[in-house]
Image 1 (spheres, rainbow, N blue to C red):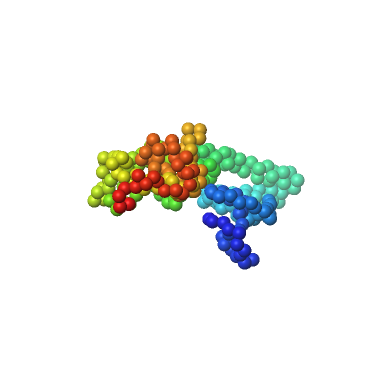
Image 2 (tube, rainbow, N blue to C red):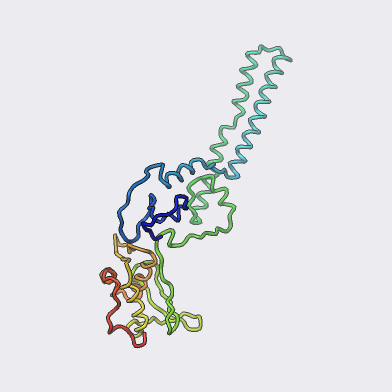
Length: 279
C-alpha cells in the first residue's frame, strides 16, 4: 500500500489513513521520517491483541462430550453417596458422623481418576497416526476433529507463507512462453507454448531477442534485489518486482550474478543495440 503525507478526515477508515504507518508494518521500498503517536496497547496492533484476549476459546466435540459426561457422572456419584449415608443412618441406625465419612469415601472412590490419562493416551495415539500421514498437530484435542476431515480447502499462497511470487508465463506477440522454476534460485528454463501444449525444447535467449529484451526491461525498470544469503535466495523489495527479476534469473543464470547491479542502474532502458527491430 502506498503511503502519502496528505491530510485525511478524522473519521477515515484505517485503510484510508495513508499518512499512518502502523506497528508491525513492513517497508518494501522507499524511505520516510515518521512521528510516533501511540505505543504498546494503544497502537492498532495492541488493540487487536486486547480484543483477542476476550475471544472465547471453542471446544472440540470430544471436550464437550467429556465435560457433559463428567457432569452426569458427578451427579450420580453425589446422589449415590447421599442415598447411602441417609439409608445407613435412618435404616441401620448408624451414627450420622460415620455415615457422612462413609458417603464421602464412596464419592471419592467412585471418581474415575484414570479417565484423563486414558483420554490423553488415546489422543496421543491419534496424533501419532496423523503424523505418519504428514499432518502435524500442535494441540491434542484437535486430533479428534481433524481425524474426521477428508478434505481441507486453503487459500494460502506462496505470497502469504513465504513472501515469494514467481512468474509462470510470459505473453509476447510471438506467443506464450512458460517458465520453469520456483522461487528466486537461478534454476529453470523457458518453453514455447503451441496449441495449448508446452513444448519440451528449451528456448535459447540468444535466438529469441524479443524475450531477452522483455526480461532485460523487467530487470532494469525494477527496484527489487535478489541476493543469496546463507545458501538461500531471498528478495529485497516488492514481491511482484522480485518475480520479474526471478524470471530473468531462471532463463539466464549467467545474468543472475549481475542482477543486483542491473536493478540498481535506475530506470534506464536497455542498450539500443539489444532492442529488436520493430519492438
